[in-house]
Image (cartoon, rainbow, N blue to C red; front, side, top):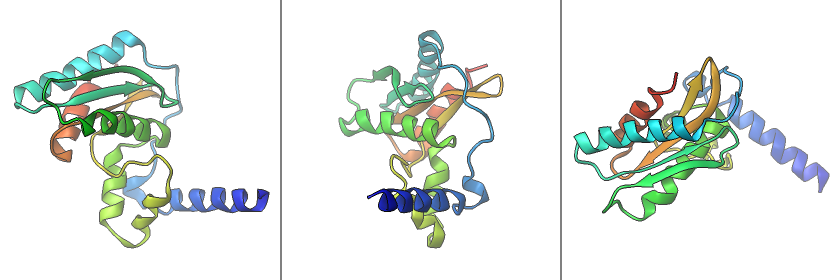
Length: 162
């Protein structure tokens, strides 16, 4: 059993390091968790971007461990986007990279297909790490429209963190 767990762990590490340079994790260390006030500010900016463009979205903000700090969903957002927003945020926080990096790696085929073996990695744009003073304090995830639009809103939210 220990050998199996060890082999799975080694395979996961190899998969992460073989994703390619465009998918490499951010070098930033983890910092203290995002505050509720900052999470609300980031979510408000993401929602403002969605409203401006007439997109229905769900927004989730998590701490560095992937624990939900704040969540909001617009009326008429597709039900499936509720959980997807949380999963995108967790993916970005836990793997220290935007979820788009996994999307790009998967689209490249070949070694990029290893993304499918990474537990919790969401290969769809819309999850972005939140960085304050050079440290990852959490992540924001947005879902509800195209992945490109989700990413645009998540980036707007992440841009509020100083």
